[in-house]
Image (cartoon, rainbow, N blue to C red; front, side):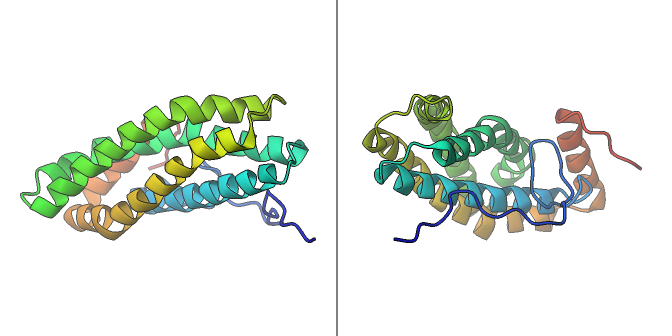
Length: 194
């Protein structure tokens, strides 16, 4: 039986990296491109979590499983909260004030999703940390915690990518984008040039 590695191969050329966003990305002068890059990383991390569940179903709570659990934990513990804050500060207020019922409903759904993710993470995060630290929970327990988390993220990403990001990006001029990017950088203690 051929198995797929848990961790994808690493490219030989090192991409530009930013704190809390360790994937090829635009700079803070392109905040919507940064948000989109974070969604790409989120999708990869969710896929890794799915592969981890399958790996554990085969009884392999090995070094690969611990490494994958560590990567998933690190993303959702460190990067995801910053990303949600970006959206809550810069997208949701504009969506609520838009006067468009679909955008207002989407803003409410996004906020509900963020709260649900935090609640789900309170259970899933410690289970992944235990696996990372060599004390794995039962595979069925981890799957029961992870699958609803993965599913909800799927619909959340579709809402943001399909409606929220394009609608808010269309509203913002260069100065608003610059202010948004500067705030995102400041919150992450990143110095920007310019």
